[in-house]
Image (cartoon, rainbow, N blue to C red; front, side, top):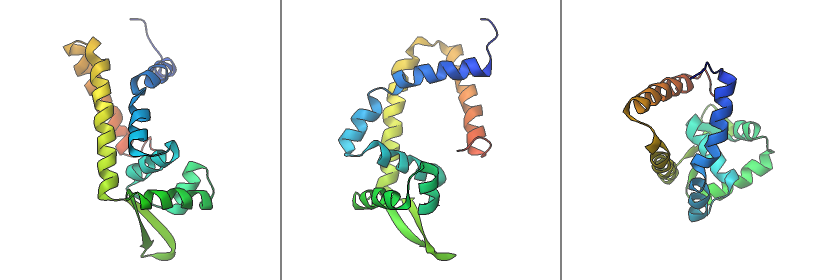
Length: 148
């Protein structure tokens, strides 16, 4: 195989990703009665552990009233809990509830099942190589070097 640049590799990943997740998140979200925006907020909270409402609004590029409405619906669905920030009572913290964490785990399972279908074309050595690469990428993301 000829030499490939990071830019070319990222383009290839971007091209296959929609096909990999096609149907997973749409069916999943409709079964959970969630909008895309609500789901993206859940994912953001999951990745940060806990966050202020203002930080969430800034990261998602929405106003505080919009974020408040999204969080209201996620609280009503019991996926998110609001807490006072003990260090600054003016700030509201949001975190996933047990139900929210379970929802994320269910989504990860559905995506994993989809990947099982996709990875069937790989042989053992290719799977080991891909696992090594994904582990390295995962470590980089969890170290904060490439976090959003």
